[in-house]
Every structure is written in C-alpha cells, then in structure tokens.
Length: 248
Image (cartoon, rainbow, N blue to C red; front, side, top):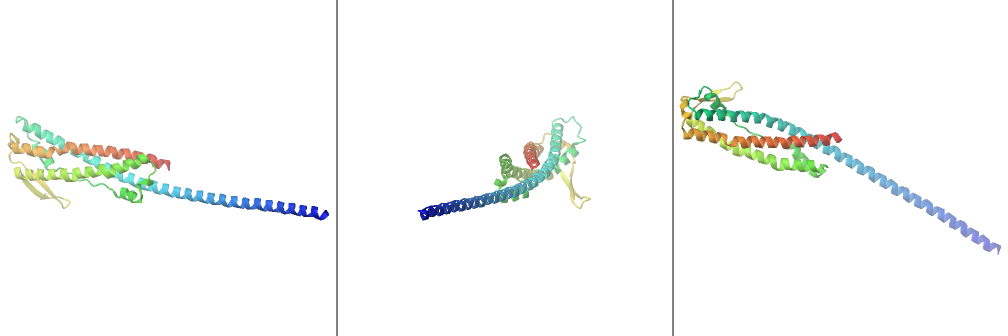
C-alpha cells in the first residue's frame, strides 16, 4: 500500500515538472514571436522613413524646377503683351492716314524681332518617374504632376516651338520681301537685323501688309493664354508640394 502511494506522488511530481516545462517553452515561443514582430515593425518603419525621405527629396527637386520654369514664363508674357500692343498701334495707324507715323518704324522693328522659344526642365520629373510615381503618397500631387508633365507641358512646347515658330518664320520672310533689312554686328558678337522703312505709306490699303499683320498677330493671344494657364498650374503644384514638404 505504501509503495502504491509513493508511486502516485512520483507521478504527480512528474506531471508538475512537465507543466512547468510546457509553460516555460510557451513563454520562450511568445518571446521569440514578439521579437520577430518588433524586428519586422522596425524594418517597416525604417523602409517607410527611407521612402519618405526619397519622396520629399524628389518633390523638392520638382518644386525647384517648377519655380525656375514659372519665372521664365512670367518673363515672356509681358514681352509678348508688348508685341501685341505694337501690333495694335500699327493697326490703328494703317486705318487712319491722318495719324502720325513717327513711331511706325519702332513698332515694326518690335514686330520683326519678336519670337519665343521655351524648354522646360523635366529632369526632376523623369527621375521621380523612374523611381516610381506611386512613391508620391499624396494622390492629388501625384495626379497633378502626371497631368502637368505628361500632357500640359508637352502641348505647350508643341504650340510654342512648332506652331508659333512656323508662323514666325513666315513672318520674317514677309518682312524681308516687303521692307529692306540691314544686318549689323552686335556688341555680344551676335548680329542685329534692322528694318529699313523707306516709304511709310506702304501700310495703307495694302493687302500684303494686312496679311503680314495677320500672320504676325494671330498666334499671340493663344500663346499668352497658354503661358498664363500653364503658369497657374505650376503655381498650384508648387503650393501643394510646399505644403507637403512642410509636413516633413
């Protein structure tokens, strides 16, 4: 009987040790799992931080390029508006022979010389695009960047550098045929082309002169509108990016 009770006690002790070992093992497993989860969380946080640093760096580069391009646009608009004013003055003179033509040559020279070419700095956008536009977390900024560089800028460049340029070449040829032109050296080692106005009356009742004014003037309002609309989109995007950069 005594041996029987001793055996029962030994079995209970063994079961107690097994329970302790089991609890210990479970605790070890829990600690390992917690450690893995913490490591994964730290890794995810580090990756998120790196992505954010990359995103903000790329956005700042895009913003800097936009600011420079916007400044160039705003230099061109007043210049083109001045050309429009000269065309208007010429049109007034040609329709009223009683008006003085003292400033005619000056306005014609402005019309002869005017032209514009534009090239946007797309390098920051291309760098951002190659890294993945999806890395821009702000959906509105991502959409506006894609629209501006993928559509609006491309259309503006086609209009200004192809359509407008083509018309300006025609305008120069017509000036050469209608007026005398004199080429002189400039101080910066370039050349200057000056108009020779021998007979101011050439502007009156002259279909060829009217055609010259039309060829010179019709692209200007659309060009100015293009540049102003484009600049508005640039300013909007600059402001959006600036707000995003302030978030850090």
